[in-house]
Image (cartoon, rainbow, N blue to C red; front, side, top):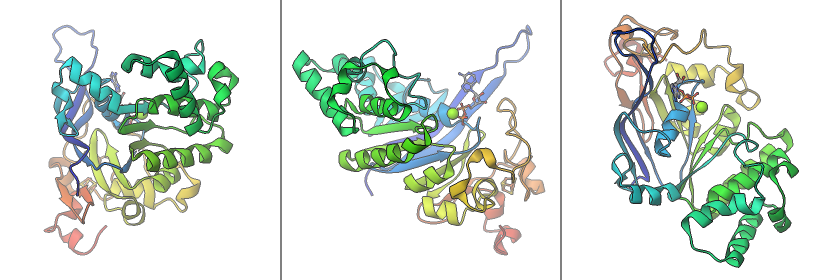
Length: 333
Ligand SMILES: Nc1ncnc2c1ncn2[C@@H]1O[C@H](COP(=O)(O)OP(=O)(O)O)[C@@H](O)[C@H]1O
Ligand code: SF4
Ligand SMILES: [Mg+2]
């Protein structure tokens, strides 16, 4: 195995809760609360979990859009949490993001040439001709006509606008691309085309992706590995087929297993999980999932389960999986 491209060590992000009360103890929203994760170069990591579980905060920390409260973020063996401005500028090139809604992420007053070319002008000294040539080749790569250069974003369909956003994200030849719900604002007809395009580009350029999507069929189709988050923590991770076919954590099971045909459902359709995600301000004691877990035991309220290695790259944190647990011995769950 290669050295990981990304390694997260005990990563935390706490947001202060604004309070009007004087002298009250300061409260924190524990959006990301001790995440350990390794991502190998060339992998597609699918990050799943209900809304509010900390997925976007986690990737925002990687993109340095947020400062970590605690922990380390290694990117290619450099610790991003302690970087000089100059070094940060360099890694900003290496990690790019494709946002959910290509309408809002593209400046409506700029021509496509300037939208896609902007990162190039910030980082590279190119002549006008070189710039136009480079932008044209990027547009070609994402399947847009060269003439698109001299048009504005509103002249394109949602799928085409997402292609423009992808061209912009790839302009500086990044190594890691974060895709946060990349097709959820795109017309149905273009969605599959955009996903195929993203995979084709990934193979051609040897990229690494982190994919966040509510659409479980998309996550299954694209990801090599799945990481499941619940209330700021990773509860299970493993190869996509393992996670989809034999999830071991009750939360993952509730998310995936109980759905008769995942290709037709998204996380929004879940009926197997009662109630909503508890507040991240005072998360439940012990296992954070105990308030909703159908398998919860006494110990779950008291002790936080540790992450257990279940297979080659399969890990989960649940008391039922402890080897000395009688229920686990009987093969439950
Ligand atoms: N800038 C912020 N300030 C305060 N709270 C935040 C901020 N960003 C996210 N949160 C809170 O952190 C938690 C995780 O949010 P988020 O990372 O957006 O989850 P997800 O992307 O999984 O839906 C939520 O409780 C959310 O309200
Ligand atoms: S540790 Fe307990 S509450 Fe948490 S998922 Fe496992 S059985 Fe459920
Ligand atoms: Mg989010």
